[in-house]
Length: 507
Image 1 (cartoon, rainbow, N blue to C red):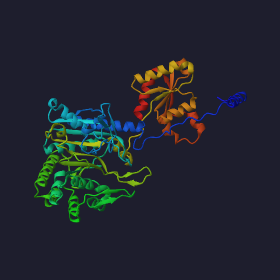
Image 2: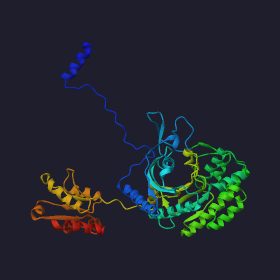
Image 3: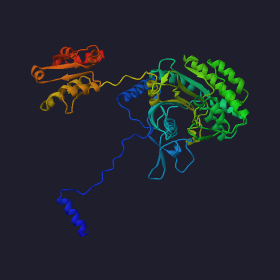
Image 4: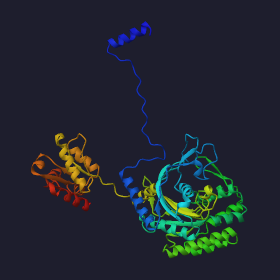
């Protein structure tokens, strides 16, 4: 250090100054795109959906299964890109043994791995349901997240079309149990073999071109016939200027595919007849028609009419692993966006038959079929349709007056919780008015007041906040409101839990 620097520092110290220090860099508090935080109402809504749907699956004889969040990337399926680092579509990392792992993209690929790994010990067919978060490294949008919860049911080991019909009927019941009224969702059913037969007749034989056709048709509900026509041909440029290469079909072949997608009708039998006119005669097309006919018969036996499950040849599903029947659940309720503008919510779930997925591990074809819906997406759909679950109720709040009496307040809260009623002691540092405001913001059903007078008399004062909120709009005079103290009562301590129960039951 030079003499001049020493002098400068000494002068600063003599003047009572500190050397200038840079401000610490603070990160910006922000959520990654496509990842959302959920508070009590949303968490409770998703839990209620999962509980209701799980009950349906178990009544149908399906057992629960949980698999890990990570799978080896090569086990996740052929929809992953052929690249050194499989980071398109999934979130991947390299393990310490240099094997690539990825967060699961769905719950079906992990099931295929589990079935292959444990096939000798499983009952056959193996019927399981599962739920949990999945992750997709894709562009997020309205109602589409990079992390969301799925709920699946699958049957592995049955090639019968009736297994598909059972999954479809169970999906109908499950969506209604989740909160959708009858007729609010429609399961649309198709068979990949029909479209494969059509493409063979149109001269489309290359697997890459078939996949491009399937992906184009899968966008019909979003882009309409004109947009799909471009994707069936040379390609399409979207509003942002991004270009998607098309399937390369000639005009006649593209029109034939579009005519096939328009062959649907409300009645399942009528649709089958119409489809037979379009694709009948090809071996694969006839096989698909026979499978749909068997599904129709089983659905009829299960009491599922065409207004709840219908045949729609425009449904193809986007993933490559589907081999036969495919189905998609469409929300029919009127929905609005966050600004209150009408919007089309579209698909809330889907599935199909994937007879080749387990064979990737074993070499032996193992028939399988299943249905999956996004729990987060269904909850968002219910909100958009104005059918969201009511805001989650908070706990009873025990007001804290005196620091020296905290043990007494905790004893009251313990007594309330022992009776099965959620309760908490206010642990902030504010006064009575702020504590009551806190309880109101928590949507607490009641506040319990235990002051010196109550402690001496062996009583408690209970304020019915539900009743108070209900009556607040009916009293114009604040003085009268304070004098009346609506919903407030002082009762013996032994009657506390019974009084709280009455308030909760009335709410």
